[in-house]
Length: 200
Ligand code: TYD
Image (cartoon, rainbow, N blue to C red; front, side, top):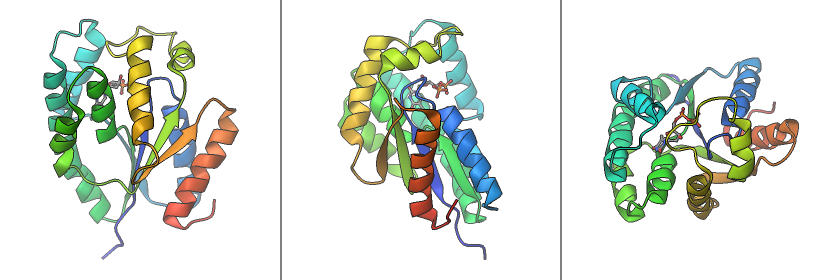
């Protein structure tokens, strides 16, 4: 039986550079022959697609508790698929996971202890990389397109504060992205090397 894959998660406010860093890490993993897949939440499953439509529709009409339940239901389905992949020995790199619900729905006023309770079923990632940036800067990076219902500065500042409160605990590591992309890339590589024991 193949050894279990690693479960690596990227977190951060919108525009924190997750997509770029995930692509760069993916290239490194491929060069090293580390079998892996890229995943994201909201997922590409039915509930995830509904949430994506909601985020882009421009009107945040749902109660934040309902949002939390939807994101969590999406994760419940997604986790099963991730578990199967890990069992086959394939590493999973996921763009957002349960800390997004704690931070985004927590910032919308939902009780964080209740949100944590909801995530009890979730698979535990081996490593969570929190790409930290000031939302004032990160929103400039996404200004070329229509903003989603989650993308406003004051709200994302609260999201960031919650994220920072989780950093350092457990499997989450803080990565400052207010630096050149290659410096961020090196730090991400170092943290992943530490985890999987491969030298890039
Ligand atoms: P997405 O297009 O994936 O944004 P990004 O590329 O920045 O990750 O849209 C996901 C949005 O949903 C994003 O603004 C964060 C938000 N979100 C939550 O509010 N709660 C959650 O649990 C998750 C997974 C995402």
